[in-house]
Structure formats: structure tokens, C-alpha cells
Length: 103
Image 1 (spheres, rainbow, N blue to C red):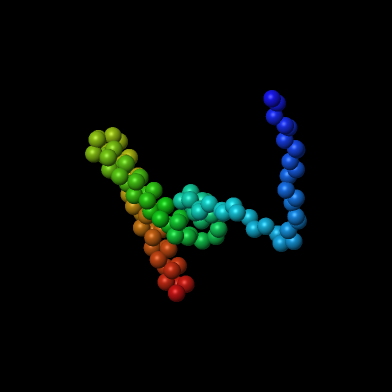
Image 2 (tube, helix red, strand yellow):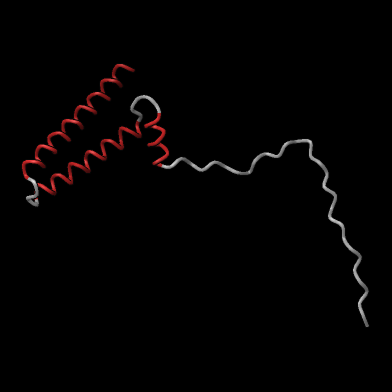
């Protein structure tokens, strides 16, 4: 009552392909931080760096306004806010002048 053993099976023959196989891996899309890093590494102020600097300075102004409103370091916060506004205005004026000259 024993079953007959199955004959061993051999794997299918693999034929070499003359054409190279295309890679099925795709590169992931660059993230925001990749864009910023490349913008810092290349000369000039790209749109990613400009956007990031403007957002950072605006957040700094919000923090300084909050600290001034809470009464923490009144004179110091006013001076830092003035410096931040000056940096924001001068950076945007400089990038606008560079864009006008490039056009």
C-alpha cells in the first residue's frame, strides 16, 4: 500500500538573454529637505532656499512677537525683531534685484 515515489523534477532550463534587463527600481521623488540641501549646496539662492529663509524669518518674528506680548525681554525682543525684519527685507530686495538683472 505504499505510493510510488515521484521522480525528481529538474528546474526549468534558464536561457541566457542577450538583452540587458532594465532595472525595475525607481528613484524616490526628492523630499522638501533634499531640495533644501541641494539648494544650499549650489551657488545662488534657489526658490527652495528663498522659501525656507522667508518661512524661518517669519516664524522667528512670530516667536519674538509672542515673547514681547508676554513681557519677556521687552527691549531685547524689539531689537531682535528689528534685526529680523531688516534681514527679511534686505534678502528679498536682493533676490528681486538679481531676478530683474537676470531677465
